[in-house]
Image (cartoon, rainbow, N blue to C red):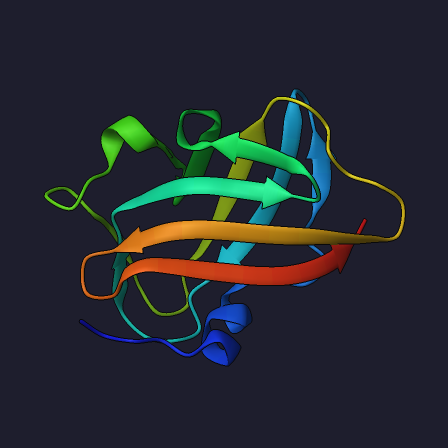
Length: 121
């Protein structure tokens, strides 16, 4: 199993991308590490609100993926330089000032990968 250090994982998050959208919240991820795959999202936590996998959508290259579309057997290719938007449907958990964000994603090579960052809206 590949281990990716936290300081590298944090580079995937696009600072300043946290915002409100209709029926939820969104953020942007950009692969700056190298070719890889995403085989799912377990959850996204923003402040005290946890968005379960069923409430998370990933949009990349104009295609929308839900957790039902992605698995270890059917991962999404996330190539170097590609950008994707994560949309969390449900309660608006954002607050003025600093917001804490935690994303638990799945990768075929590394297993569970946890990204923890802070951002302002």
